[in-house]
Length: 390
Image (tube, rainbow, N blue to C red; front, top):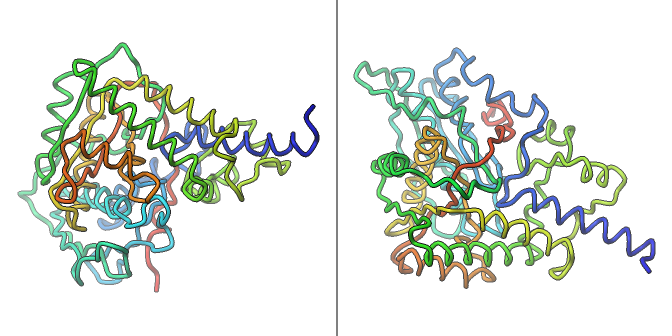
């Protein structure tokens, strides 16, 4: 017989479990977010100042946990200085901030595409005051950018996909394979950056299944490790009012979870037990999505400097835009690429599978790829939230 205390505990844990199941690889459900939370997607082309117009498109870049850790300083005329918002890091799952630096790269790539669209050349000087060390970030700038009118600058057709690009965490269509022309477009998109692109599909059944197993194992580690799970819980935005107020993080609009939260039965202060029904449901849901995955894509770098991480972010942004051109969707699977101690097994496995021997090589991106029902855009805080005032 279930007591009142036990029932409240079960509901609390069920809430946490279903939320992170819906979040998949840390992205959340964004199909029913309030319109003000996605206004940045509608308004990107409304800016008249060239720097603001370019930046309004750059803030639509993908970012780990949708943290949007971009700070820009416009106080010097004709210049954009990009810094990391050090309050928006992932110290548990991304202890060396590799993903955060990659997310600076996605921002810079969209900035460059937008500048080209306006007939401007983006002269990007990376780490003008020195590159971050391997262990942590600091307040030094990531990049100093000057926008220079250039009649000879070529527009990039990938710009047209910026407003259509959305990370898709749904189950994928098992009956459709990604065509060769889409893979060719993605390979061409990576070419400007020093990374090796690879992919696998149903024709390599054993390799495909092994990657599915590693993805599931890494997800299992993340959701059963209390501190890594709580890192996601901290950025949950439950219901329209929270989503509209924060416009970042992991958006949850499930009516059941919103109702639980309103009556105090959705406890975000602690993680469910590793053997709880909540965690089992998360694992089962993720495994179903992985089982529906017919393709994986990866990018491997030689070395792992901060400059290399920026290049990886830029390359991933281009790959996703190129995929969008062909109606192909993707979802990053960073869990196995993270560097906290508990995930060392899947980390070693994926590097071995993808022929990226450590420590000389690093898998910078690994993603599931395919066709799926469309999703809407993720919330964005808006351009003014990123501009340094003092």
